[in-house]
Image (cartoon, rainbow over all chains, first blue to last red; front, side):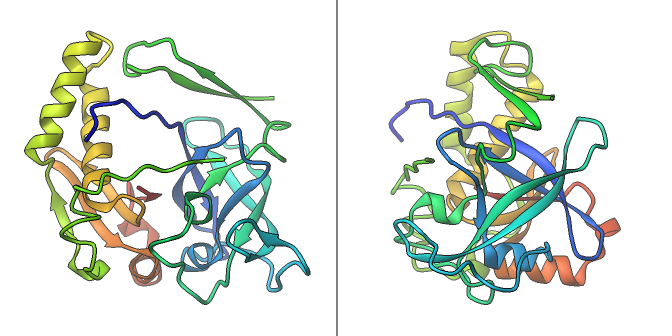
Length: 143
Length: 112
């Protein structure tokens, strides 16, 4: 441990599965990501709908993983029941577990990117502390 | 783009580095003393905004990071710490397939 404080903003959502169950997931809100991503194998384990075929010629840099371009249907925990369909790149082979080491975080984490999100949700980072949020807030508002 | 830093001295990357996910702690996982110490330091530094709810959230988050950093887990918060129901994508998949949703309320799937 270095003693430094590392901050991240996680958004809790429920995502709709093929069986119409709502699965509790969280995403790291990543303003540096152009689009939302999650491993395809994980989406399959959670029975989330995704395209059967990978996009032709498009791969994830720097891993070279194949991409399935689909949508996540989700609600934001703590907000109203609005269901959002946000574009998502499902990374890698849905039938193969992602490697556990030597893979960049961008390939293994669930990242909420900007594309297809900021037109639906206003996301505001604020370092002001408050009760229950000692290091600041991520505010999420419906647009 | 998200970056990642690992604490190579934490169990995830040292003693457990060669372990299979089945060998990682399952069930009730309580915060280790060093995590309690770090959280107490932060609490003293930050002041009243570091309330009991935030303290619980931080203890859970840092405990998960201590044992499972970078791993996809299914867990729920309990008064003593966290209850870890599945470690790794495959275990999570089995949990989703075998346990009906109504029996896993409050369970969150997260990459630590």
